[in-house]
Length: 140
Image (cartoon, rainbow, N blue to C red; front, side, top):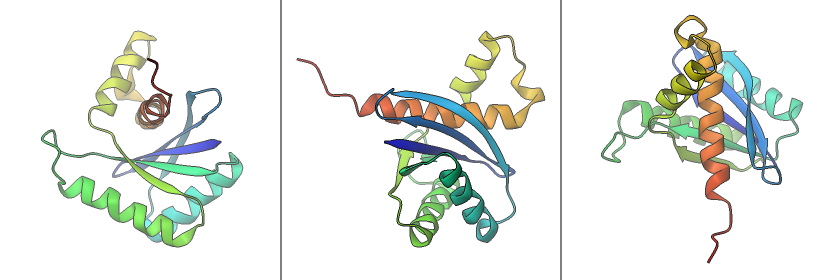
């Protein structure tokens, strides 16, 4: 199953794609935010372009697991996306995904502070990789 992952930022939506067979997430660019009413069709266009069968949306819960303003926004975005498509939309805990993406980009020799769109896309890949890893059957 092909999956599109979203990292909802204030200025951009980071994108990543992957599938449950390969279990590998890949950054796929970013969409400039223009308000939810315009962002939803843009996300659905990307879902179609990548042949996604599911959308995973990162939700930045507080470190103690509670829902703060950013998490509330992400959950509301999930609801709006569900109302606009038949694709399954799944919220996913994204705590510290941006930190992990910054570290990964730093290790690859990139400076994430200079290319925020690349960081947003890398964060979406971290979110999706976490989701894909959680779907692996447990071994006994």
